[in-house]
Image (cartoon, rainbow, N blue to C red; front, side, top):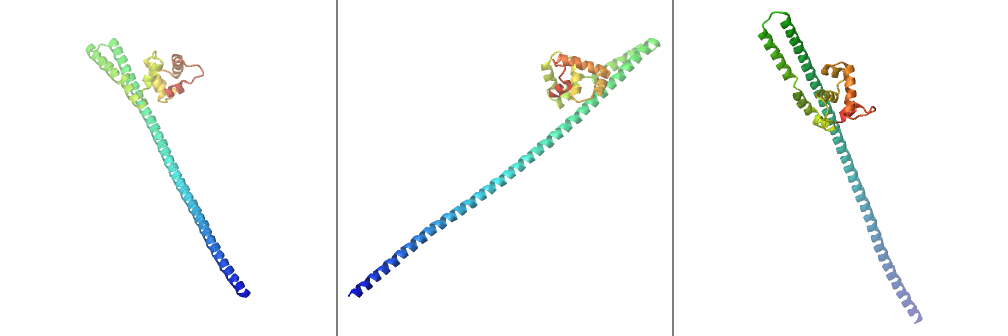
Length: 226
């Protein structure tokens, strides 16, 4: 009888042990599945972060490429505009020089007509008409307003800004400033103004005073900033 009771106890213990082991196994498997899911989740999250980081990097590269392209386009546009201004300045200078030369020739002809009129017996009416035509030609080709119109297309509002700083500038002063803005040399300006280079330098001293510039101030730099 005692042996049967022991056998029963052993059987019950075995059943209990198997039950506990089964519960432990299922609990372990449940824990393992949670850990596995968490690990997979972390891996997926890490992958997503890498993807997002990669996308941001690509976006940043694309943005940098766009900015570089825009900067390059702006630089090219700026260079092109600068070249156009240089070319237009040369055209203005050439036109002004041709006008001056033309006027000089006409003035010389007028002086010659006056001379032969006093020294020889000629048709006074004919010489009078010639002089009238010369003066008319000079007034047309030496049109300061016409030059200002063309100049203003290259350097908008230059004369307006200059006059706002000093209303006492003469026409010659304005011409001198315009030629400096065109970046012409002293020799070129002297030819256009019909004076020698020394007189150009003296004219600049007077200009600096009119524009209230000090000795240390650079006139050309000031004009380029107008």
